[in-house]
Length: 180
Image 1 (cartoon, rainbow, N blue to C red):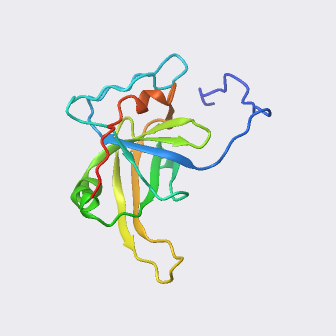
Image 2: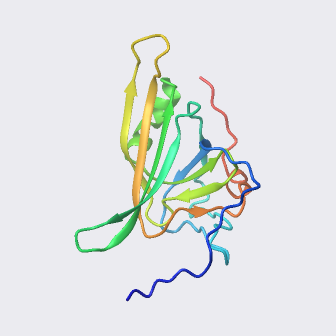
């Protein structure tokens, strides 16, 4: 018999509005020495980057193109792990994006996604996320979607962690706006 037992009821709050979708994505370079401690409820209570020259960057993605998933996976020997995935589309095809292409394609990141109900979730906290796709589509007709579609995924030992508060990430995000 398994030693894993539920310790509380799982209930749904019926008196709250909630929206699907992502309103913000933040990426920062993964480093095993980044500190993202959890409070007693298991939520991320702060973020301290190992290298103070590194920054948290907000991704300006095309509306309604971002999503994330957190899936249970089972390997051939019965071991279990989680797969965290983040997807988004960037419409820019300019020098600012092209100068970041190598980092987005080859780098390893921790992501924080904030949904439209203002819940922040950290993905890749322990092992980071790497690009599995970074593709451009021009679209054929005038109304077609176009842009760079980015998919990042990573293997984790825990579910994506909620942030205690969205200000944990917004307070350390780089406020610099680069225009062409």
